[in-house]
Length: 310
Length: 320
Image (cartoon, rainbow over all chains, first blue to last red; front, top):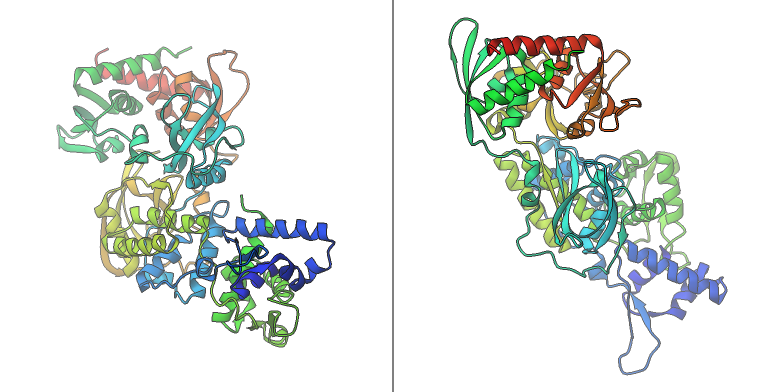
């Protein structure tokens, strides 16, 4: 920390010797120990995103190399937010749960408060979404995607088989509270989506930062298309016992009463398999009138259930 | 992964400018702001006092120990060399940017404007964006906006709600508390006048919502000790009904979907035996029927019998 303060306050190049003279811990160390501590502290600052520039104080002399931190780059610039903007930032800081990026968003908010941003979260009543990232690979994958580092990991597919994958990460997408990595699979030579909970090894770097380009116009949402229900293209007519099968009534286009105990319900759907399962789950409360393909699928499902009888 | 020591360094570096623009802040408030204990704050302050641009008086950061010990408040001196915080790290900026995008999806029109403004300013300031996208479930925008409007005005709501387990539709008057997401679903927690208790409603199962002019009777703030912690949504206990099922490979996704436990002894290399918890036997029966042929009931016997009886009755309705 002293190294940081010293360089920040100096606002000019300091030679290694000047730095050593100024900090007691360095001065009291043997030359070898000083070198080690100096390197360690520089690395630590770099990890915090603080760039230490090396250069010369005087370009006309072959001066000893100097170190400096540029204040204008290190400091948070002035930002002004409206009351509502400040409120949503405050609410955003409550989105991550404690095991993930909550610490980072809390520090970010503290920094904004220090430059005079007045955060009053009561100014807005909003939906309070929660984001979590329990997947052990989340941090490594996020860092790799941000810095564009190619990575390798072993991956377990839904059928249980495991294999090593080498991927150029494009980005992360969360769908139904699960994280997926979208990127270019180098062995399969095609874009792929990976569920982070199925990454079974540590994530290792297999290239330099910035060593690939994310193709223009890549949209993770498109890559993740299979995770979303398809738009309905088919129409079905059902007979439903009055007051029953609420999940089907909820998506119904039209409901009319046939008699006191039965309604006719029309629904639109995309997948015969999915709708047939839902209908079968209601047993005798729902009967398919049309189409025939759906009727047959439900009957097949029910017959499979009867066959279970011991 | 950020280590504890670098987290501490980040915190102390953030504290220096914060304490200068918030002179006299109580230690308790500081602890809450930075999310650590008061003891940790005191330790951080004593480390800060050993740092500075040099080693002499005026070069080392000074904390007014009198004020600290007497009044529990913090005054920092001789830290003028760091009047402003460090710029946001990539991870800090990403955490807020991703969170704002998440908020944006669930926001109303006016709120979106504020979020877009905040996003543009943050992304501009750090010169970076985050390669991260978040999708929240789609719910009826009209119903969501009605609920949010009642929430912000503190009005009671009339709901029509469908319960999946019992397959019934109910009407209830509620005092809305908050709308949140949990495990990828949107929920409303509210004081339910009918149940005279806190209830959690899944937004996609609310089929109608109407805001009344009546102020809420029991707000979340007034209901001390009443928890609406989402973790309590579904936690299997000793009395939770469960079934032991054998799954075909095509039904293995159920394990993740319902957090089923894999157990030993299917005696069949193709099938996986699991223990799966449900809110009641009716819910389990529907799950088995929905996946009939891919899911085989091992126990309880009662469930196996009900599945067959329901399937028979349904086939009879088709004249099969």
